[in-house]
Length: 285
Ligand SMILES: NC(=O)c1ccc[n+]([C@@H]2O[C@H](COP(=O)([O-])OP(=O)(O)OC[C@H]3O[C@@H](n4cnc5c(N)ncnc54)[C@H](O)[C@@H]3O)[C@@H](O)[C@H]2O)c1
Image 1 (spheres, rainbow, N blue to C red):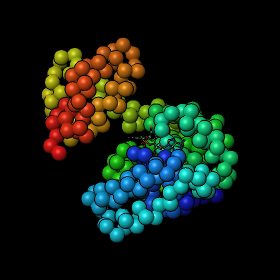
Image 2: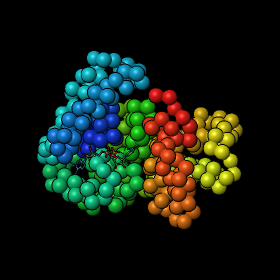
Image 3: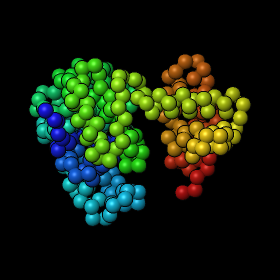
């Protein structure tokens, strides 16, 4: 039996949830977005309006009319029972295991049996969450990258209990909303992207923090010798320095030293990356 998704709910309307909801609605799906209170829903409306403008600049075929219709077409709710009535539920709530498990616990009792649950978690494994869902065969990870309309990978990663037909249906759904599905055959912390990116960025920081080469020289080497458009420090500036700092400070001794270097030379000086106008490089507004 083929599984088809028409009605999609996104849980959490923050940075990623709002983007996933908008991207899915833009591709013609019936979308409901759920958040905890009216203030969060008001913020979601503002995010959707902002995305409408960004899509007009970045996405082929996006114009004032169809992006306004996309934003207006998303149903917003604080009622979990309404949110649960979907073929596919994509969860993008805070990266806190307790919050996610609690939510799946409630959702499991509310959603129809057919409903598939997908988590957008970046650092938790689906097997950390699966037993709270009450439907191990219909649960997996669908991991988007920030700026989903442009950086359009969708990493699909199940547990050993995920039904292969559910996995295939979610990968097909990702394609239908303009993503490139990246299928993982088994669970891996960091998926494909962060398994490559995090060690790469750390190696760059190690070279500069160790006094071997300036950040700009590290980036230049990488760009010229590999043809890649950006080196590690250009990428770090886009990501923002806070996230890598938080990852490094929770690591072993050598990683803690790199965190201290980031803090002393950049974070404490307000150089947090491109969003603040300066990180390893300066940016004009
Ligand atoms: N920000 C990124 O670049 C990024 C990229 C990929 C994946 N992710 C993942 O997406 C998820 C969300 O991250 P984010 O950056 O969008 O977070 P965020 O803090 O911007 O948004 C979280 C949203 O969840 C809502 N929320 C809080 N508690 C809730 C609950 N109990 N039920 C429903 N909604 C609740 C908040 O009101 C908020 O709107 C995390 O799992 C994160 O790992 C984030």
